[in-house]
Image 1 (cartoon, rainbow, N blue to C red):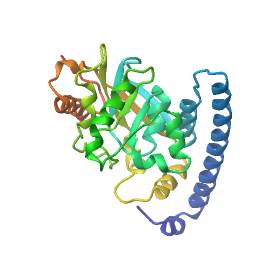
Image 2: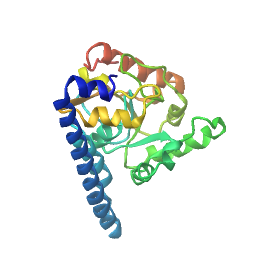
Image 3: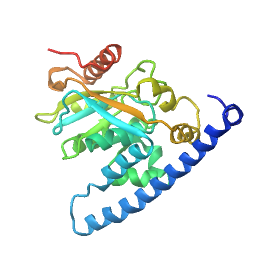
Length: 264
């Protein structure tokens, strides 16, 4: 990635415009956050189901310059989504479209503001290091997927450049063995097209650098959520088989340019 100084020397007008866009987007996000918190607490005061965490995440997606498009038929209830993973922006994009909650690394729980926002969206926090707690995490996930809010996992376990798929971590698919009655798994192939390199949060890159690269970009970016053919996890013997099937379907869609392939 070119340094800020190199970008400024190469095109100072674009750099200044990018700085202005970055600051404007941060301001709009702050206003959206304040409005969302006030409205969320007002809804909670009257014990109403609050739509504002989802709408706030959707506003983050829009404010970041991300337009969303979908293909395929999205299952809305009794569904467990599993998607490929590029960056932090995947979360507001996916939640804004589906209203889902997520499974996230427990380190995020202690982040200022972000951790709290995850909590009000019912995020399920898991530990990557404490292998002894996997059983409890699976039980918590099993309880969550039987609720009204669908759950999304990113089985690659980390973000990457989108050039392929990383090996999937099958541990959380254990919540589907056996699955709750009527529960389907729907793989989701998330694509940013030619802008994937700009979106991707790779390796040791600082999150602030990734924020700058995305929020200072002047042109719109389309995120396409390809809702692939769902399947019944009860037809698979274990978590590894379910994980392998999800990975095969997302991989096939990726190779086919996002088209959902028929499955039998």
